[in-house]
Length: 74
Image (tube, rainbow, N blue to C red; front, top):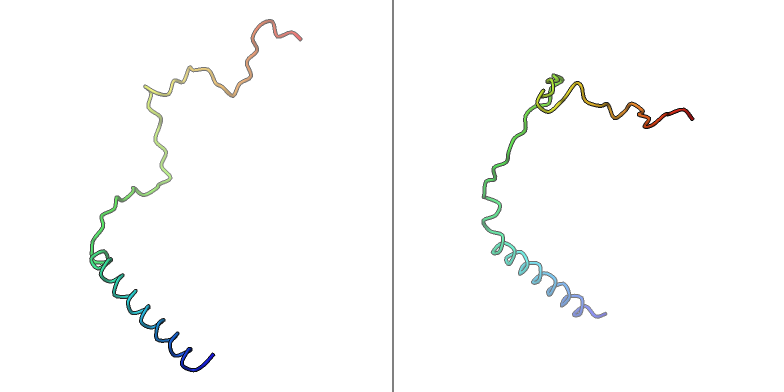
């Protein structure tokens, strides 16, 4: 390659970078200055609250206990 070819490539690349910078500045101009509001969460504690009696029934069938239907005498 000749020196003029390398100089032309450097010139075109420089102009492209400058044009891209100004284009993105024009498109995304006001985005960085906007404020965002986010929801905050409650802190996690080790306190355990008892379950609601309307939902949790102490006399319900325990699904972890093996249940045999029928005579069960195999």
